Image (cartoon, rainbow, N blue to C red; front, side, top):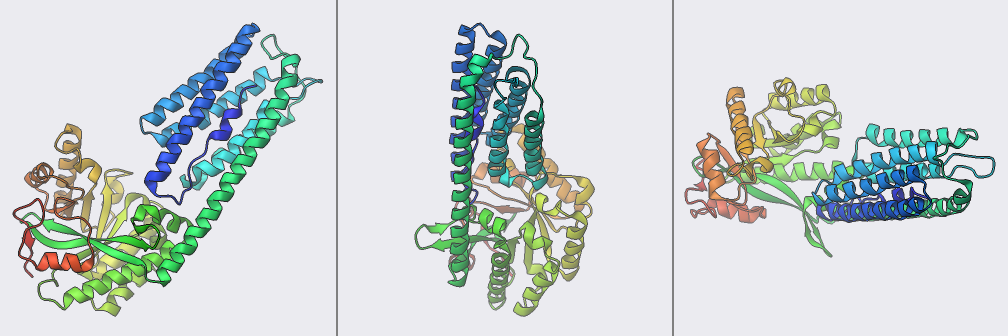
Length: 462
């Protein structure tokens, strides 16, 4: 009987680096689509041989869905492929249970049991989705299971599977469902164990001072270094220098991002304090990324202002970068905290602008000092007319709002020339320097030499 493919819809652990997690999800989606394709074709041939053409058509639907999942995954749309597989399997299982696997006095229905597997898989796969979406899917799958489980005996139509086949199929389905649930439970346990181990490692790393801030230069239109973005790194004895995508997601899921974020903010203020003691460095600004959990803390603004007061750093030297998704979790509360910080002189930057939920209706409410053009637009700005048009509009928006616009992810001179020609005034990217340790960044600012790839870049004067 069909329907066992749902057990293979699993993603890799959420605490793996983003690239590794996506690769694992990709391969598992390929496996899921292949199994759906093989099952659909095998059962389709079997029922075609028996002359059950309606059932054959249903199996053809499963095989087609498997092909669609494979193609979508290979196009790089992992999230879309996951949703396609879940929604397609749900519709398939409901139709199969209602029309083809009809309960009789001799043989009970069994295909609907795969809805339990689908619900368990959804709990594992969609952990990164909003809770309302994740648990909404789970409740939908479980509700459908309850409906089919409570259905009385029916009168099979001429297209329903005969009891002779269902007598064998019920054992196949039951064994497959039990095996599938055991696989999902194992994945959940493995994920939980890995998650707990990573959390312990992060906690120990913070206690042992194994976290570092790296600094990537930001320059102005005249080629002067005006500041940097502070980027978090974890110096792990086993894995070496781990970038943020290797631990930040796990830190957010466990709440560890709160003490880690406080440490990053405090370290940034200490660095700014050191720069204030040097005449050639005191003009520099420093940008720090803020997570959603940090912003949701009732005393977040007080934490920031307290760190500035303890370090004696002028508030306008600190820039806090926030993403659109972070702000939209509770707009009124976020705006209130932002206004408190802006009134004190802290600069606020909207990161990744244009890639998420961009809306002028909420943008005008925020006391922003800066917009950051995402690297996704910058990468295509020379070759893609749409990316170029969007970037020009974002730059014009910044001028209209009278706030700075900084473009990140600049990797070649052509991108820099285009952005500069369109009036962009601030730049960041590998063209001017990769993230580096604090001492290396300070030497770069103090040196009279040029930054890589740009003959005009030089340290800014105080």
